[in-house]
Image (spheres, rainbow, N blue to C red):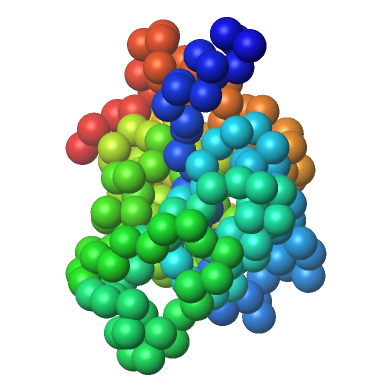
Amino acid sequence: MLHKLIRRHQLKYKICISGAAETGHCAIDAVEKAEETGREIARRGMVLVTGATVGIPYWAAKGAKEEGGIVIGFSPAASELAHKKTYKLPTDYHDVIVYTGFEYSGRNLILTRSCDALINICGRMGTLNEFTIAFEDEKPIGVLEGTGGTADEIKSIVEKMHRGPGSIVYDKDPKGLLDKIENLLAQHKSGKKVDRYVRG
């Protein structure tokens, strides 16, 4: 009983799913993998953070909620009305949506800064933007390989930028990727992380 009480009051890791809103160019099973990643986040007692949008983040939110998890969204809109009418974005499968009012680029910064780790699944330019923010902030990053789009280009981009490998892990399986993310988070929390980041 005491163990459950202590666990209940521990801070939960917040994991951002960053991915394509338009999934037509993604791998054929990218949506299913996004949903399973959301489920796996919920199973581990973590909080899913999304851009409160359609596509990959939406399916991840669906998976997390169906598994009984907590989902927080960060919208580019300034209000629920604008979120629905102007941006035509959903509100279901989220427990809380923060209406930032900072358009997509500003939302991406707040979204990424609000998470403890970021996972890329498929993706386009916005996903790359969120990745570079997380990389600059030295956050743990997971890349779900084989999902198409940005996710399948990350390794090549990182190699070509000559900035070091960063705190990035890669896997084709959602469960395996979350195992690696948890390991990175433990290293960061303990202060034992290896500084593999080269500024400049």
